[in-house]
Length: 117
Length: 110
Image 1: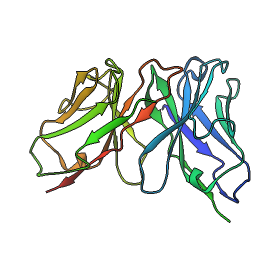
Image 2: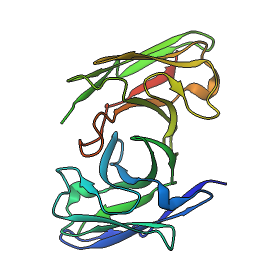
Image 3: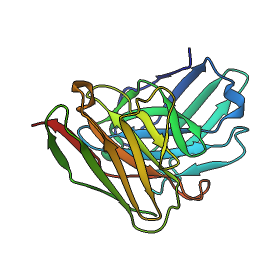
Image 4: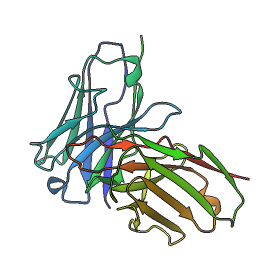
């Protein structure tokens, strides 16, 4: 079964850091680009960051550029999102998603990040 | 950044009726357009990519059309499980052009 499982979400104070993980299974992880997409409570979807299959190419939304870092470990079939200098507006469910030429054909169940004092 | 605008924000439809959802791009995205369905508490599910290609396992009652800046998702005969929020997303020149989603259309029972 093709599956993505996120973890690492938590309640964190403004200015803090957090690392999200996404474990992939059921497909050849190393040949697909991957992304993180978030959804603030009651709001729509926002693409956050993506990277190429090798990890050499990384891309970010302006809203997180310079604060978030995306990476992957193909030997562990795992995608990461290192988040720093967190703000209240980063509060959201964070989904990892498998890239199908730019559309996302597989999604995880999401992990909640709450930024609040 | 390419801005995606969906209309209407809410669509009230009776079961068995046709639903037509619209998505407009602020500039041409060619056919690089996807549609997703999201139910409460669930992750989005890919319905359509390439503007008109159904994803694996998606019923034939879902169809997509359009190119350039104007796109349509049609659900030919609404089933109870189709009441949800639908999002469009463009991926023209990705990477590196940022990916953007529309604000969503909620399809509710009339």
